[in-house]
Length: 194
Image 1: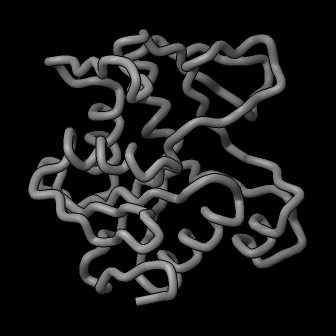
Image 2: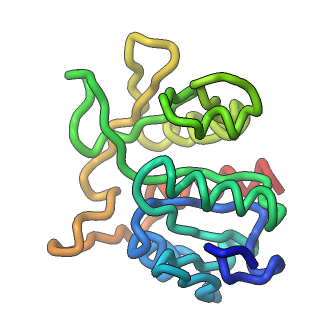
């Protein structure tokens, strides 16, 4: 246990999907995981652990902003033996080439805060993604979603059809019968990691 996470060590999988919104974590657990159990609710920062095709996965909300995800990711890596955290959620961008609901896959992200410094252990403002995990996600995107690329080699995005994303709670949520992009990416990740 930590001041922010009430889970037992064995309650957290070594792979964690991290949306910002606690209700998005609940939605993912309810719709994609089998035998999902609530393993954290401290400060209403919901975390669920369950199984996706027999693989143990935790979905843990991070809250908004770098300080919040910094606290939770630090504690998950250092006190819960987590190997991989995949941030899933929304972000902003300064380019006209992106549209609302485009999915962005980044190799590096920049921050003026101390998050990259704490993550890297050196005086850097760049946090790098796992190239192995990005390759898996990129492969799934190319095969299933018609990946597009920006001019920069540092950024790629996938223009997903509207039916593949979770709409705001005030609107009807659409769930496809066949696998959607999320299921395809998680399946490829679990095949590669396990």
